[in-house]
Image (cartoon, rainbow, N blue to C red; front, side):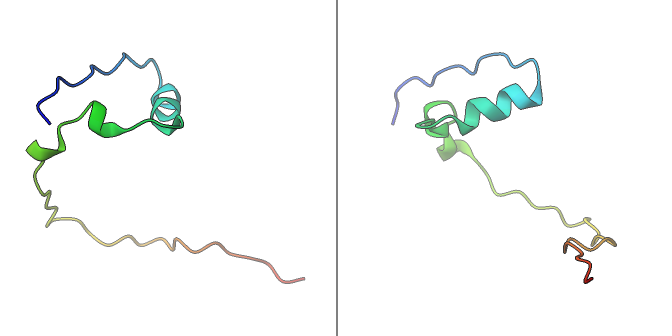
Length: 59
């Protein structure tokens, strides 16, 4: 567990970063030490006013 972590390559675009993380066999534990993570809390978030359900038309 104390193995040195790999450094992340620089990404020019979000699409490039997405492709990097979606690559088969990619494991975030090689780059991020999850043992140092903490729980996030967002108490001031407001509920959305838009529906997330897709709408379909009947013809």
